[in-house]
Image 1 (cartoon, helix red, strand yellow):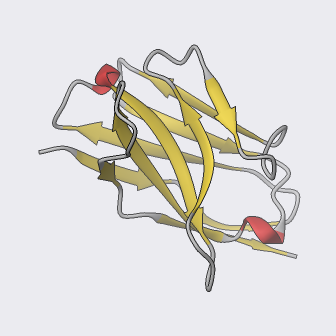
Image 2 (cartoon, rainbow, N blue to C red):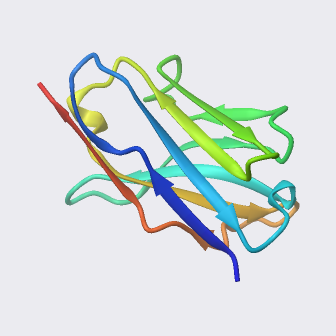
Length: 119
């Protein structure tokens, strides 16, 4: 059974930084592309960033480009989201998700971690 467990959320002032982690178990980690998504109150869940199976390719939403960095450590079965220059509009529940390589949909999701950015 595949499990994704996020950690690292919290309360931070605008301009600050946080690093989210997502530990994956239950299947070979390198068989997944990994993504981060977020959902703010009253809004739909939105894409934040994705990284391919070996970390060689990444993509970001325009709203976070230049401020957030996605990375992975396949030896630790963990994906990270380094968030710098945080803004109040980054406040949301952040979810990591796993997509089996060559499949279109994310089949596995974590429980989410709250990030709150105060102004």
